[in-house]
Amino acid sequence: MPGSKPLAIEVARHEVSVSNPDKIFFPEIGFTKGDLVDYYLAVADGALRGVMDRPMALKRFVNGATGEAFFQKRAPASVPEYVRTVELSFPSGRTADEVVVSNAAALIWVVNLGCIDLNPHPIRADDTDHPDELRVDLDPGPGVPWADVRRVALATREALADQGLTGWPKTSGSRGIHVYARVERRWGYAEIRRAALALAREVERRVPEIATSKWWKEERHGVFIDYNQNAKDRTVASAYSVRPVSDARVSAPLTWEEVPDAELADFTVRTVPKRFAKLGDVGAGIDDAVGSLDPLLELSQRQEREGQGDAPWPPQYPKAAGEPPRVQPSRQRRPTEDYARPSNPSAPRGRAGSVAPARPSASLRRADGTVSPTGRRRSAHPLLVISQAASKDEALAGLDRWRTRHPEAAQHLAEDDVLVDGMRGRSTLWWRVRVNLRHVPEAERPAQEAPDPDYDPWAGFREDRR
Image 1 (cartoon, rainbow, N blue to C red):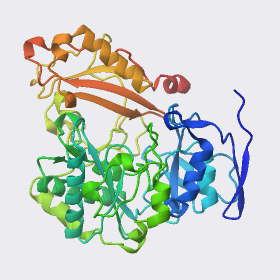
Image 2 (tube, helix red, strand yellow; image 1 turned 180 degrees about the horizontal axis):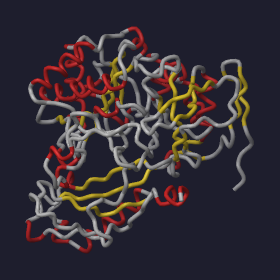
Image 3 (cartoon, rainbow, N blue to C red; image 1 turned 180 degrees about the vertical axis):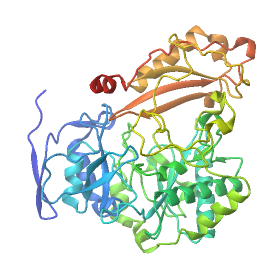
């Protein structure tokens, strides 16, 4: 089907071209690319507040929300005069010039590239080493009631206030809530992450029955407070971002008075522009509420003296001094001290002293997918890798086939025993499904099989490097 004619619109005194404005981006609600542009124009003041002068990773859905997305860190070779760029360095040691949005024309230009949601870094372009935003990402596990997410958000507000910081809540637009706090630009990423970890543990202490700071999914319950969203190179969907879900929900700023009764489905591309026209940006005061990180860092020191040291980092980051074993507890086969050696961040990737990228094939599996015996202790959490696929549907289809092969075991699985992970590859997401057999009687637990399907997102990358 031929595309619609480009549309030229004037935004912030610049002419911006919108290609294929009639292309359907959200089939379920009949929402087009042009409609998406109109949405961002309607909330531009609020959306710009969330991304202003921040480097941004481009998450592009060129075929709409139901198509496959790809990540583009590097800015296109040619950008309009109203679009800025800044060079960023990454944990891998590589650098890239990323897009910086600082006006409404640049905002619409980014949307025209297929960016449904906006994913800025917590830094400003004039100082890329010192974040000014502490980000609290509340991520509910499977089956966790929405009411629990709201309760954890309220506990987060209180914990921040006790440390001298003002929390600003917004729906994630997916399943959770984000709480942001502006901080002075005096600390690096490591300190921001350490403060976020201290806050996560404090919130968990206050509402332990519904909140967790545990990194490994097999150890979690309730709402996970994702402290690692504050690590360098992590991005989060910003305020007023449209999320690529069927009903086009929005990551909508809230007042704290709204949080106890807020419902995710109430904030969509259809409703938020009307709300914005009536109320304005309810998060507009965030830039005026800048606080110090010192109290949280002091809390971190107290926690460390009490035996709570560092927590696991994501797999692509160099091993940190004092970090616990970077291995799932169910797969730990060696004493903890054997994992203690920190990485050498200057070592070439893939060589001794560096942390290899996350790979879909577990290192302990044989070629047929089975796990070799180790003679070590039994796993506390018996996990099986079921499928690894380029799409979520393919991964879940593999889970259905596994359930058909093992109906006795499948009937014992609780909702949160099925772990579905969106894994970030070099430029796209891939999907992994695991099951926790903790509720399956030991005699009925199936053995690890070769994943079905067994997708390897790094295969092409390895071929390219030969």
